[in-house]
Image (cartoon, rainbow, N blue to C red; front, side):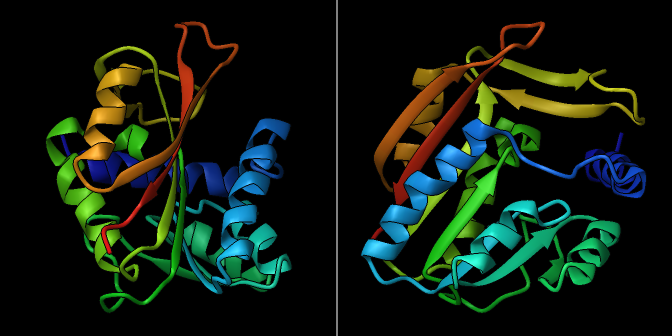
Length: 204
């Protein structure tokens, strides 16, 4: 099974459906909290990894940031372009940018598709494209340990999901930088998934 190919096929179908048109209040609150850090530190260049159709990317651009959205699917990149955003197709394991190109990073619900065995590879690549000392806002689903194909939603193919307990996820993040913020939020999900949000400071 090719996990990346299945993810690409799923999110291409989602992009074509046009169903992702807004983010919820909780996500907006996370964005507002991270904005305070970005603004206070005078940061201007952000990368949004796993941007989807660019809903958060658009919000960051409206804040005056020079932001680039990266997504696995060409269909989402086209949607970003239609919104007047800079979107680039690429894998989070091989981001098409030079070292230190950005001074902040935002990635929401992207690591939920990263196998635990590839976590270090993925976050190391994200750290590569940000300057030393940059803040990384990382949100994902978790609350318990799980890895496997999960038939969630009505689009196909089914996707691979990777979840970790709160303690395990925080420890994984702490291997790569200082975890300055870590919060969890219970959500209405049939299997009791909870959202995990962290701000990790890249090593100086």
